[in-house]
Image 1 (tube, rainbow, N blue to C red):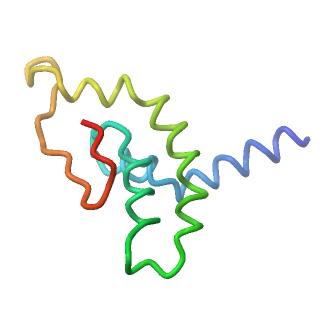
Image 2 (image 1 turned 180 degrees about the horizontal axis):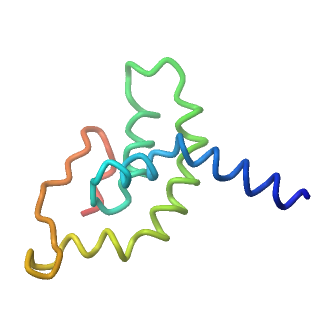
Length: 95
């Protein structure tokens, strides 16, 4: 029973994860969720950045799991690549 509750809580919490939101919107950037979460946490107009900092390690974990999929964006277009620019203003510029 505790395992089921933990699983349900984990699935519900992924709905607000920047990584999940970015991948569901179709963006294929390397570490998209981590970079976005960090940018929101450090934005000067954000009243309180700590909720975004709480999200950062969870986004990092999901971004790491989805890294092979994100790296396929750098393949040629004939092999499933996607050459859209990945720009997150104020984010960590990894690639």
